[in-house]
Length: 259
Image (cartoon, rainbow, N blue to C red):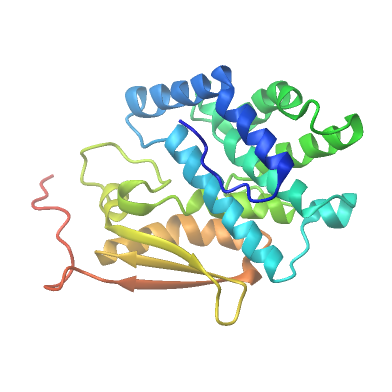
Protein backbone atom coordinates (compact mmCIF):
# COMPACT_ATOMS: atom_id res chain seq x y z
CA UNK A 1 0.00 0.00 0.00
CA UNK A 2 1.60 3.32 -1.06
CA UNK A 3 2.16 5.91 1.66
CA UNK A 4 0.43 8.63 -0.40
CA UNK A 5 1.81 11.65 1.44
CA UNK A 6 1.96 15.04 -0.32
CA UNK A 7 5.71 15.53 -0.73
CA UNK A 8 5.28 18.90 -2.53
CA UNK A 9 8.74 20.31 -3.42
CA UNK A 10 10.60 18.27 -0.79
CA UNK A 11 12.97 16.15 -2.88
CA UNK A 12 14.41 14.36 0.15
CA UNK A 13 10.95 13.36 1.33
CA UNK A 14 10.03 12.19 -2.17
CA UNK A 15 13.09 9.94 -2.26
CA UNK A 16 12.37 8.58 1.23
CA UNK A 17 8.72 7.84 0.40
CA UNK A 18 9.77 6.02 -2.78
CA UNK A 19 12.10 3.79 -0.77
CA UNK A 20 9.41 3.09 1.80
CA UNK A 21 6.87 2.18 -0.88
CA UNK A 22 9.39 -0.17 -2.51
CA UNK A 23 10.59 -1.82 0.72
CA UNK A 24 9.29 -5.39 0.79
CA UNK A 25 10.70 -5.85 4.30
CA UNK A 26 8.99 -2.80 5.80
CA UNK A 27 5.67 -3.46 4.11
CA UNK A 28 5.78 -7.09 5.24
CA UNK A 29 6.52 -5.95 8.79
CA UNK A 30 3.39 -3.75 8.68
CA UNK A 31 1.41 -6.79 7.58
CA UNK A 32 2.90 -8.78 10.47
CA UNK A 33 1.94 -5.98 12.88
CA UNK A 34 -1.68 -6.56 11.98
CA UNK A 35 -1.39 -10.33 12.23
CA UNK A 36 -0.40 -9.82 15.86
CA UNK A 37 -2.75 -6.91 16.57
CA UNK A 38 -5.92 -7.98 14.76
CA UNK A 39 -5.70 -11.75 14.29
CA UNK A 40 -3.97 -12.75 17.52
CA UNK A 41 -4.84 -10.02 20.02
CA UNK A 42 -8.23 -9.04 18.59
CA UNK A 43 -7.44 -5.33 18.79
CA UNK A 44 -7.61 -2.62 16.15
CA UNK A 45 -5.41 -1.86 13.14
CA UNK A 46 -1.74 -1.05 13.71
CA UNK A 47 -0.63 -1.80 10.16
CA UNK A 48 -0.36 -0.04 6.79
CA UNK A 49 -3.64 1.89 6.92
CA UNK A 50 -2.81 3.33 10.34
CA UNK A 51 0.70 4.20 9.16
CA UNK A 52 -0.59 6.03 6.10
CA UNK A 53 -3.17 7.97 8.13
CA UNK A 54 -0.70 8.99 10.86
CA UNK A 55 1.97 9.97 8.31
CA UNK A 56 -0.45 12.29 6.55
CA UNK A 57 -1.82 13.79 9.77
CA UNK A 58 1.68 14.36 11.18
CA UNK A 59 2.90 16.00 8.00
CA UNK A 60 -0.15 18.26 7.85
CA UNK A 61 0.22 19.34 11.49
CA UNK A 62 3.93 20.03 11.06
CA UNK A 63 3.33 22.17 7.98
CA UNK A 64 0.56 24.11 9.72
CA UNK A 65 2.90 24.87 12.61
CA UNK A 66 5.75 25.88 10.31
CA UNK A 67 3.44 28.16 8.32
CA UNK A 68 2.73 30.00 11.57
CA UNK A 69 6.42 30.50 12.24
CA UNK A 70 6.97 27.69 14.73
CA UNK A 71 10.59 26.58 14.46
CA UNK A 72 11.20 22.84 14.36
CA UNK A 73 13.73 21.26 16.69
CA UNK A 74 15.98 19.98 13.91
CA UNK A 75 16.27 23.56 12.65
CA UNK A 76 16.88 25.03 16.10
CA UNK A 77 19.26 22.44 17.50
CA UNK A 78 21.03 21.12 14.39
CA UNK A 79 20.74 24.00 11.91
CA UNK A 80 19.02 21.72 9.42
CA UNK A 81 15.94 22.51 7.33
CA UNK A 82 12.16 22.36 7.31
CA UNK A 83 12.44 19.65 4.67
CA UNK A 84 14.43 17.56 7.14
CA UNK A 85 11.75 18.06 9.80
CA UNK A 86 9.17 16.72 7.35
CA UNK A 87 11.32 13.65 6.71
CA UNK A 88 11.63 13.08 10.47
CA UNK A 89 7.89 13.08 11.17
CA UNK A 90 7.09 10.83 8.21
CA UNK A 91 9.84 8.32 9.05
CA UNK A 92 8.85 8.32 12.72
CA UNK A 93 5.24 7.69 11.72
CA UNK A 94 6.31 4.81 9.49
CA UNK A 95 8.27 3.07 12.25
CA UNK A 96 6.41 4.06 15.43
CA UNK A 97 4.31 0.89 15.71
CA UNK A 98 6.64 -1.57 13.95
CA UNK A 99 7.49 -3.13 17.33
CA UNK A 100 4.11 -4.87 17.24
CA UNK A 101 5.82 -7.58 15.20
CA UNK A 102 7.45 -8.56 18.51
CA UNK A 103 4.60 -7.79 20.93
CA UNK A 104 2.04 -5.15 21.80
CA UNK A 105 3.56 -4.85 25.28
CA UNK A 106 6.66 -2.62 25.19
CA UNK A 107 6.27 -2.13 21.43
CA UNK A 108 7.84 1.34 21.62
CA UNK A 109 11.38 0.19 22.52
CA UNK A 110 11.02 -2.71 20.08
CA UNK A 111 10.13 -0.15 17.40
CA UNK A 112 13.28 1.80 18.21
CA UNK A 113 15.45 -1.32 17.85
CA UNK A 114 13.92 -2.27 14.50
CA UNK A 115 14.16 1.28 13.17
CA UNK A 116 17.80 1.48 14.29
CA UNK A 117 18.52 -1.48 12.03
CA UNK A 118 16.50 -0.30 9.01
CA UNK A 119 16.94 3.49 8.93
CA UNK A 120 20.54 3.53 7.62
CA UNK A 121 19.39 1.86 4.40
CA UNK A 122 16.44 4.20 4.02
CA UNK A 123 18.62 7.30 4.49
CA UNK A 124 21.66 6.09 2.51
CA UNK A 125 22.65 8.39 -0.34
CA UNK A 126 20.09 11.02 0.66
CA UNK A 127 22.06 12.30 3.67
CA UNK A 128 25.79 12.48 4.36
CA UNK A 129 27.11 10.48 7.31
CA UNK A 130 26.83 13.20 9.97
CA UNK A 131 23.39 14.37 8.86
CA UNK A 132 22.25 10.75 8.61
CA UNK A 133 23.25 10.19 12.23
CA UNK A 134 21.33 13.29 13.31
CA UNK A 135 18.24 12.22 11.37
CA UNK A 136 18.36 8.77 12.94
CA UNK A 137 18.65 10.26 16.43
CA UNK A 138 15.66 12.54 15.87
CA UNK A 139 13.51 9.79 14.36
CA UNK A 140 14.34 7.29 17.12
CA UNK A 141 13.47 9.85 19.79
CA UNK A 142 10.11 10.56 18.16
CA UNK A 143 9.32 6.84 17.91
CA UNK A 144 10.04 6.21 21.59
CA UNK A 145 8.25 9.36 22.76
CA UNK A 146 4.95 8.54 21.02
CA UNK A 147 4.03 6.63 24.18
CA UNK A 148 1.56 8.71 26.19
CA UNK A 149 3.75 8.82 29.30
CA UNK A 150 7.09 9.61 27.64
CA UNK A 151 7.69 13.40 27.41
CA UNK A 152 8.98 14.37 23.96
CA UNK A 153 11.88 16.79 23.71
CA UNK A 154 11.29 17.93 20.13
CA UNK A 155 8.51 19.58 18.17
CA UNK A 156 8.64 16.72 15.67
CA UNK A 157 8.13 14.09 18.39
CA UNK A 158 5.21 16.04 19.82
CA UNK A 159 3.63 16.18 16.38
CA UNK A 160 3.84 12.39 16.02
CA UNK A 161 2.35 11.82 19.48
CA UNK A 162 -0.69 13.96 18.62
CA UNK A 163 -1.05 12.56 15.08
CA UNK A 164 -1.12 9.01 16.45
CA UNK A 165 -4.00 9.92 18.75
CA UNK A 166 -5.99 11.53 15.93
CA UNK A 167 -6.45 8.30 13.97
CA UNK A 168 -9.83 7.81 15.60
CA UNK A 169 -12.53 8.15 12.93
CA UNK A 170 -15.36 5.60 12.76
CA UNK A 171 -13.99 2.95 15.04
CA UNK A 172 -10.30 3.44 14.21
CA UNK A 173 -9.50 4.86 17.64
CA UNK A 174 -6.10 4.10 19.10
CA UNK A 175 -7.50 2.74 22.37
CA UNK A 176 -7.40 -0.99 21.57
CA UNK A 177 -10.73 -2.74 21.85
CA UNK A 178 -11.90 -6.30 21.46
CA UNK A 179 -13.92 -6.61 18.25
CA UNK A 180 -17.59 -7.24 18.83
CA UNK A 181 -17.73 -6.41 22.52
CA UNK A 182 -19.84 -3.60 23.94
CA UNK A 183 -17.15 -2.01 26.08
CA UNK A 184 -16.79 1.74 26.54
CA UNK A 185 -13.67 1.49 24.34
CA UNK A 186 -15.63 -0.02 21.45
CA UNK A 187 -18.70 2.19 21.84
CA UNK A 188 -16.72 5.41 22.17
CA UNK A 189 -14.54 4.51 19.18
CA UNK A 190 -17.57 3.99 16.97
CA UNK A 191 -18.97 7.35 18.08
CA UNK A 192 -16.26 9.43 16.36
CA UNK A 193 -17.56 10.53 12.95
CA UNK A 194 -14.94 12.97 11.64
CA UNK A 195 -11.63 14.50 12.66
CA UNK A 196 -10.55 17.67 10.85
CA UNK A 197 -7.52 19.93 11.06
CA UNK A 198 -7.80 23.62 10.25
CA UNK A 199 -6.14 26.89 11.26
CA UNK A 200 -7.29 27.92 14.71
CA UNK A 201 -8.83 31.24 15.63
CA UNK A 202 -6.45 31.81 18.54
CA UNK A 203 -3.81 29.12 18.00
CA UNK A 204 -2.00 27.71 14.95
CA UNK A 205 -3.99 24.46 14.76
CA UNK A 206 -7.61 23.65 15.50
CA UNK A 207 -8.58 19.99 15.94
CA UNK A 208 -12.27 19.69 15.12
CA UNK A 209 -13.95 16.45 16.20
CA UNK A 210 -17.48 15.50 15.16
CA UNK A 211 -19.24 12.79 17.16
CA UNK A 212 -22.38 10.87 16.34
CA UNK A 213 -22.79 10.04 20.02
CA UNK A 214 -21.53 11.67 23.22
CA UNK A 215 -19.80 8.41 24.15
CA UNK A 216 -16.98 9.66 21.93
CA UNK A 217 -15.99 12.07 24.69
CA UNK A 218 -14.35 9.06 26.35
CA UNK A 219 -11.91 8.88 23.42
CA UNK A 220 -11.04 12.56 23.70
CA UNK A 221 -10.58 12.48 27.47
CA UNK A 222 -8.71 9.18 27.68
CA UNK A 223 -6.54 9.26 24.57
CA UNK A 224 -6.22 12.63 22.88
CA UNK A 225 -6.21 14.80 26.00
CA UNK A 226 -3.35 12.97 27.79
CA UNK A 227 -1.25 12.79 24.62
CA UNK A 228 -1.82 16.46 23.83
CA UNK A 229 -1.04 17.47 27.42
CA UNK A 230 2.24 15.53 27.34
CA UNK A 231 3.22 16.50 23.79
CA UNK A 232 5.32 19.53 24.68
CA UNK A 233 3.47 21.54 22.01
CA UNK A 234 -0.05 21.71 23.49
CA UNK A 235 0.08 25.52 23.49
CA UNK A 236 -0.28 25.53 19.70
CA UNK A 237 -3.60 23.65 19.62
CA UNK A 238 -7.26 24.28 20.28
CA UNK A 239 -9.88 21.50 20.26
CA UNK A 240 -13.50 21.86 19.22
CA UNK A 241 -15.89 18.95 19.80
CA UNK A 242 -19.38 18.80 18.33
CA UNK A 243 -22.05 16.11 18.67
CA UNK A 244 -23.81 15.98 15.30
CA UNK A 245 -26.27 13.10 15.77
CA UNK A 246 -28.44 12.01 12.84
CA UNK A 247 -31.20 14.62 12.93
CA UNK A 248 -33.33 12.62 15.37
CA UNK A 249 -30.90 12.62 18.26
CA UNK A 250 -27.68 10.79 19.00
CA UNK A 251 -26.78 7.74 16.92
CA UNK A 252 -27.64 4.46 18.62
CA UNK A 253 -24.48 2.38 18.78
CA UNK A 254 -25.53 -0.46 21.10
CA UNK A 255 -28.97 -2.04 20.68
CA UNK A 256 -28.87 -4.08 23.85
CA UNK A 257 -26.37 -4.79 26.60
CA UNK A 258 -26.40 -7.76 28.97
CA UNK A 259 -24.07 -8.86 31.73
